[in-house]
Image 1 (cartoon, helix red, strand yellow):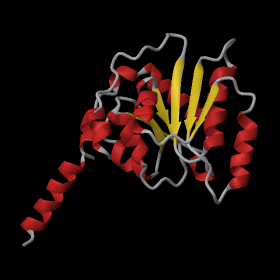
Image 2: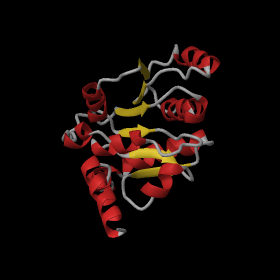
Image 3: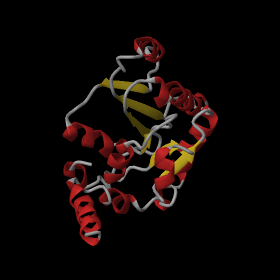
Image 4: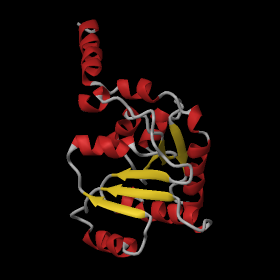
Length: 198
């Protein structure tokens, strides 16, 4: 990932009222990103309360190959007071600001190859909710940085969010994981590989 993520100090003193939680999604609005199950999961969390206390912020634009999906997304979010759709954001400083006020990064994708956004979230000290059995799961499951869930089950997604919030002090290896993605370190590893094989 870009050094700006790793050089930006995470906000360890997040000002989050006890009765309000910020959930953040960053990625394209497309079918395999499983947006509707995520929205349903947050809706389930809020449905048990008199006032919604789980706010979902979504950053990302439409996939050009799935215009109908994006249109359905726009229609579905019209009346959700707890969902804040930001559209596309390319400015990394603005994205870092959003991560800085977020309690959980949520992207329970289906068929995710890896997803560097998870690493960007971790670089900012934000625990991540991801899908079991997908690309990032094989890498993250050995670290205390978040929870893997069944992406096809909105109830299990919502339970994963609750677990992260309830056990947030147990997630501690954010920087250790993120630093492995610093280009300088990656270059050194490749140089050693080629040097050792000469």
